[in-house]
Image (cartoon, helix red, strand yellow):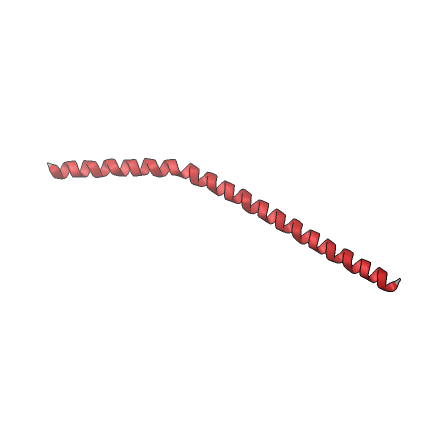
Length: 70
């Protein structure tokens, strides 16, 4: 008798765990999308920084060459 009750309690717990897990999935997906957005933003910023640095180096080199030649 108590064994049956124990089994019933276990199955009920499993259902609750499953429900909790199902509820957590959208949250995890949302977090994943947020992190992906942040990763994209970081990549974009990194690319912009690299481009700016490259342009700055090219400008400096050109200015130095012009000054040296002149």
